[in-house]
Image (tube, rainbow, N blue to C red):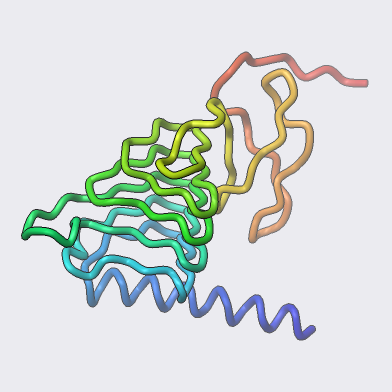
Length: 172
């Protein structure tokens, strides 16, 4: 019961923070986004931060819209269903595609294509063609179809493949 209460409080806090970032700072924060209270979002040019639906930004992650040198500001975009790992840095002007995973401690200073996993300093693509569910959770695939259901906030679901070969379902 204590775990259920803690979970409800966490999601209530996340909803309040999203509302605060949208209304007070004017950031473009999608629905279902989870941003840690210990993550840093650049308030120098807050309208330049765009985060897609169902993305998670974990503790210590930093998202910038300027380089701290001059008055130049760039929009920083993060796609939907992404995972930004702990202590990762997303520099100004970067675009991260949909369904991407940014490993903990990575320094992202270039664009990341859709369905990619990046790691390192500077971040390099370590895997492509990945698929993520809500909040960047990896979805299991075998020959282009899902092997196991995905655990979501609203129960268990098995989403359809977004790309790759389509295999007919066989009844056993």
